[in-house]
Length: 588
Image 1 (cartoon, rainbow, N blue to C red):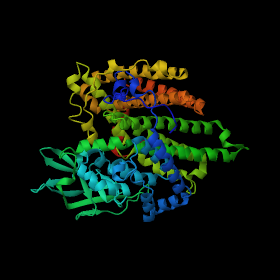
Image 2: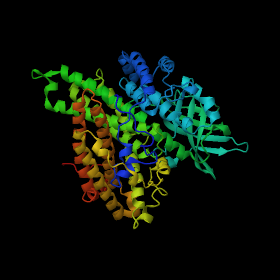
Image 3: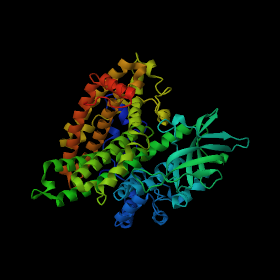
Image 4: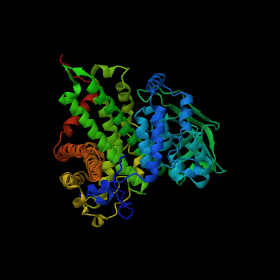
C-alpha cells in the first residue's frame, strides 16, 4: 500500500456502526470513510521484509506452477519451504511464534503471493483466513497455547470443515453429528467435502449438528491424527488445481470436552465470524491477481504488433487496460478499508466484508477474461498465463459464500433496520432472520443486530475537507444514497414480509449498496493520495472519476428497475425452460 494519511483515531471511527446500513437511511457515515487509513508503521516494516522474501522465493517458479497445475499437486518440499518462510504464521500473535500481522498487512501478503500463483495463496489463505481463524477469535487460553505455536510453525496446517453434500451455502443442512457423552466428550460422525487443504491439514475446524439445549450446531477443534479421521482422494478441479482439496470424514471420532470451540450450540455464530473476518484475505488475493493480469496484458499489448502498430495504440485495447486498472484500484480501496475496520475493533462490518468479496471476485473474473482477450488466440494457449488465471479465478465467486447468497445477505441485513423504522411494516419484517430464505444459512444468525441510531452524531463536514476535484464525485454518492433509501422504503412497503422471496429486487438493492460503498472507498483513497502529493495522482483522480460515472449509471438503472422491470417475463421464461428441461425454440 502507498503511504497515505494517519488512520482515523478510535474516537472518530464509530466501531459499532455500519457504513452500508447508514447508506440505506440516506446517510454517508463520513467518520468511518474519511480520511483513508494508512497501514501502521509496524506492519510497514514487517511487510517490506516479507514481500521481499516472497518475491525472491516465488519469482522464477512460473514453470513449476504450470507443472504443479497439470499434476494437480504442490510437492511436499514446496510446502516445507512455505513453512520455513513463516507463511503459516502470518496472523498468529508473536507470543505464539507467529508474525502478528494485522488484517490489512495479511491481505497485502496474499496480494503479493497471488501475483505468482493462486494455489499458493489458497494454501496459505485457507490455513490463516478460515482454517485456524476460529481458534484466534474464540479459542480459550489453553486451546491457543496448545495449538497456535504448532500452527504458526506450519507443523500443523489448518482447514475449515463446513461444506457437506447437502449443506453448502445452506449451512442449516448440516448432517454431520456430534453426540455428547457422559464424560463430557463428544462422538463425531459425518463427512465434509471440498475441503481446501484437506489432504495436507493436521488441524480441522469442524461444524456438526448437536441437538442439545444450547443450540443446533457446535464448532470443534479436531486433529487429523485422531482415530476415525480420514480423507478422500485429491479432487480433480477446473482451477486452483495444485492446492489440496479433498473430502474429510469422521467415524466415531472422540473429541475431548476441551476441544469445543466457543460455546456448545453456538456454531453458527463461530462460522459467521470466521467467514466475515477472513474475507480480506480473499479480497487481497483477488487484487494481486488483477495486478498480475494487468502486468501481463500491458506488456503483451506493447509487444504485439498488428497493421504495423503495437496493439497498445488501439482504442479498444486501451479501454480494456484502463477498466482493469479502475476495477483493481476500486477493489483494493474497499478491501483495505474493511481490513482497517477489523483491525480497529469494529463489530458491525459484515455487510462491508461481503461487499468486498463480491466486488473483488467479480472484478478479478472480468480482468482474467479481458487479459486473455487482449492476448487473442495466443491467450488461449497453455504456454501463456491467461488460461490458468481464468480457470483459477472462476472459483472466487463460488467459495466462502456464493455471490448470490452474499448479495441477499447484503440486501436483507440492510433492509431489516430500514423496515424496523417503518411503523406500518415493522412487524412484517421483524421475523426476516427468524425464518430465513433457503441458502441464507450461516449468514443469518449474525445479521439481526439493530442499527444504533447515531445518524445525529455523524460528521457532516467531511465533504469540505476533501480535495476540491473529488467533491463532485462525493456528491454523486450522497444523492444516490438518498435515492437508494427511498427505493428501499418503496420495496419494503410493497412486499412487506414477502421481501425474502423477491430475490431480483434484493439483488438490485445489494448492487446499489456495492456501488455506493466501493465508490466511497475509492474517493477516500484518491483524496488521501492526492493530498499526499504521490506520483500518479492525476491517474488516481481519473480512475475515481471513471468508477463514479460508471457506478452512477448502474445505480440509476437499479433504482429505476425497482419500480419498472421485466422480472415477471424472466420468471415466465425460466418456468418454461424448467418445465421442459431444455431449450425448445429451434429454428426448425
